[in-house]
Image (tube, one colour):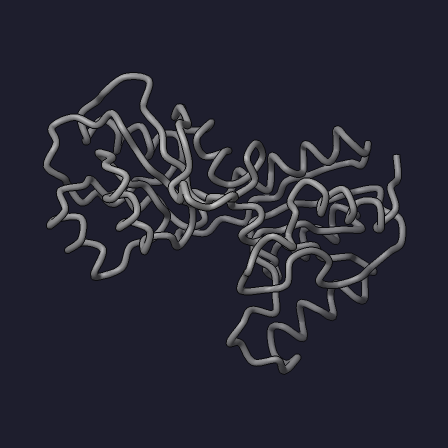
Length: 253
């Protein structure tokens, strides 16, 4: 079954509501391709490898979390950006990208999907004063030692997390935010949870974790963000009838 690019974009914008976010990049349609779409490919980042796989899959549209045209980047279309854009344009493939809107999406977003993968019970937002919280707060089904939680995360995400130990012997309450959200550790501390989980770690994060007593897990930027765009693609396929294929380009970061 085919869907028009205009209708696919309208469906995405309706559920993701990108206009509500002050983001670091343009959300929505970044590169316009064919007017009709039979096959949609989703992936985390619009890398050359993902685009080549989308061409091989016969896709007319690619939907990602990390697209192009980030604030602070050079606007010149040269080098790898030229090669990526040329591949899209030569094959008449559209690129749709949603950054913060996908992080915050309640049911199919990155943080909601990570909670399902890890088996966490969501109890609220990490930014409770915001209408669309990026991170989430919740509980484990039952308290467990920190080492056991680390093993659980590693098994579910197929990547061993880096753990900075906290003070508590067991962990029951958690906060999480996928990707490069190590800076939200202060909000996790303020929320009073036992542990905070994100993708990346910075030098100062270690000291904050140690001095505040919170357990900190850096579980991988890519590893924590594989699930939202896949869930969104499956939702769109069910709603529109378009063929959907999630393609995971391995990334150890």
